[in-house]
Image (cartoon, rainbow, N blue to C red; front, side, top):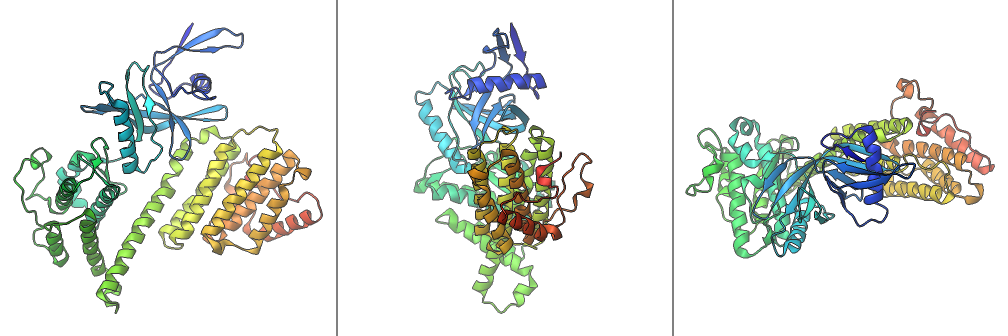
Length: 545
């Protein structure tokens, strides 16, 4: 008997159960196997010991993410590119195994494959995965042996994150889109591109194929991203000079492409070199014209010239800064720092907003109580993001709160369906892990320290005692301590979630008003001093009953 599993779209519930068993048997438990290949029979035994064979419609690959999470990627997308050495194929679905449950959600990745007809294919793919790690910052790109795949026989490859956006040539050819960009928008695009190229050069490499098709424009983040590590090579003086000239041309096109001076990618490289100028420039643009037509010894020099020009533009928009009696150098330095601070701010805001999507996609793997906790943590994140965006808190404090909250969210998924027979060892590890999270937060943001925080830390340490350990009661007590600790730590950010009176009717536990926190701490201390179990009012962190 052979059972067929269709992985073109989201698998059916009964198929998810089978996939769970196949993954556990063939890809986990110490197995060196890294893939389940399409149309290859895989056997499982039913309750009576009868063998049943299963065929998958698409390959499934095990992949280690940069954050350490193991994911299983379904190669069910189209071929999105090919060259003389290999091709790129898209994966549209990712799977995670949380305890006994398989979570499947949409996620786009790209499998880069090199053809086996190269005698040194393994060395080539190792080299390219290393170069990709430089471009992406992902040091965990692992080689995958594709031998056994019908679609990709006798090949080697590795997975890459799919970058969002359109190629730069589409932006330059779309005058309507290009003209919507402000001078600041174009400056930020130029600086993001030059920063990536500077990083590559500083590591001793050049891109080797720096064309408009290998630079992506992300409209949402207003960033340019260099892609395709296939031709990256060790830098020499000639190649570095070539990269600088190409980069200067690309930046120039952002500012000079208009109706009178249109860009056509198909003919650009064959055209005679022309000096592009901003027509009818103001003072700042006149300086930019000179910058774009000057020679540079390194990409950092060109990038610095662009940044200083942008600083001058920003200072003209800031009358308060103009009236300041700072020297010109001090004024420019101050404005440069302001620009960098703004870029860092946008990056962190993007992280805060972007982190919720993958977690929310996996919420189906959580019990209802934990789904509600997840929503509470999201409310905290929203409030922190809003406060940071409106300059009510600084980047350091926002980062501390963000890192602390994501650690708590990750713990929710780790604890999903934890064995009810909790051992003291496991419980002690959880307590120590939470204390480490708290300690890290306080190191990053010392103003959060208080006598109340110190008291809760002592109570948590007292709880980590095998002699008084009772699984059910200890877990409830720990949950209550955690709730109060989280509220107290985030109190400076004004992130107290509104009263839970609007919570679903099935939720029997609610967060108490913040004004009750001191009383509850006193009860905890009193109970601890008397060697009795603490007295608790209903708590959200224990979830619905």
